[in-house]
Image 1: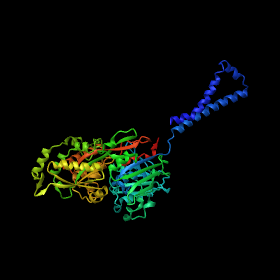
Image 2: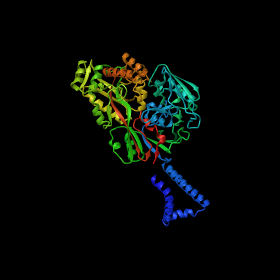
Image 3: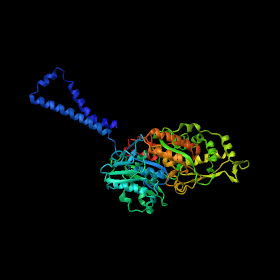
Image 4: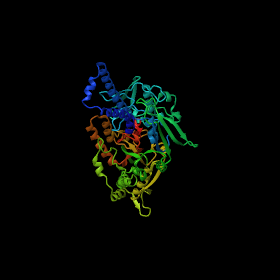
Length: 580
């Protein structure tokens, strides 16, 4: 860039130097006599010419510097992902990481999180105004917003999106966030959101993608998921879907995005973003090493080749408000209904071994549903965690689970201490962690049957109907530590996120009061006690908190990343990325 600048101004400096060189022939004493030789008209002409020369030179220099610092258009990213896109649709995408990634680029939100995890306006003109009773939010859209097909984006689209989410027939995973909210249109740019009860964390719900009413309004719930528009969407985000390639069998091999000329912040700098899809991480890594793809993101896993430093890419290690846990189904008949069994498993779970051997030390321990450095984190829970095979065996024996010395399996009333552990096989780290838990728990006479399925199968056939004994799964708690959506008894059934089916009157009251109070001291007190209840009842064993690793070529500039709410938020400022 500096070299180009020098090439532009070099001829100008040459001319100046030639002029200065010619002045060497004059003696200092001759200059006044030279000026005195001018008549009045010639003197004015000389002074005006000198002024024009200086001004034009300054203008030329400023233009040269301006042109040299102007961000260029062009460049491409080719990123690899494991799996297949299914719903590039923000009201359906939450359960599929690929869909969430693509939706984040194609669709804009009312509000978004910046690199500091602070809420800032996106489609909204400003943050919403909140009524004194904290139940009414008034939000105004930016003027002249457009969809990627050039049609206007108005309050009608916001209302349509929310009402679609609220309709149970559309099966949106976002429905719990909006089930007790009424939205009204004040004018084409202004909306009013009315809550049934106070929720200090409700404002975070405005970070969802908006879909166009004119594209989706004629589709009934049965055809909504089947529509081709889920793979050829029209959004209002910085990039639009330009091309989708498939195999003869219908598998999607790549998807190409191009800049949205109607994007409200102006045309993005990159010319193209291509995503290539792979069946597993081995194929992904092979493609990365073979330079078939230039960037990839992942939750840390054990293949060290990806983590090896290189001069050719920048590596971003992003903090995530996410934990991985084993959730015990307390509403399904199995040995896990006994608290003694859950206590024994808790005492035998070696998190450090999992972090070292599965996550290659790219993760840290998790101890409960509220994460460190967030409101209400209970440090005493962390201090209580310990390993003890002796304690675990004693608890099981006292509970009537007797170890058969031949089979090394515990029995009670002629029934084995056996249950199924279900997890997502698309993620290598999940399968490895499940295998390690299987081995650890076998040491106290517990038989664990692993059920490793695809992400789609896990969601449809196990999580939604709650058809599992135990589930190894990750939950992202978002920007606010509010545990209500994940642990309140009202969230036990789908689409609620209380995966364990945990119920407690005291916990319910603590969570309800905590989300309705704007006083941090009240929330902290409630959440400290809530964690004590969870730690006593053990509806889940919390394992790890993971970093999200993102590798991008060093030539891609303009990236500002340190903390993200979820992995898809790595694209929060992709319209500012450029190739240097």
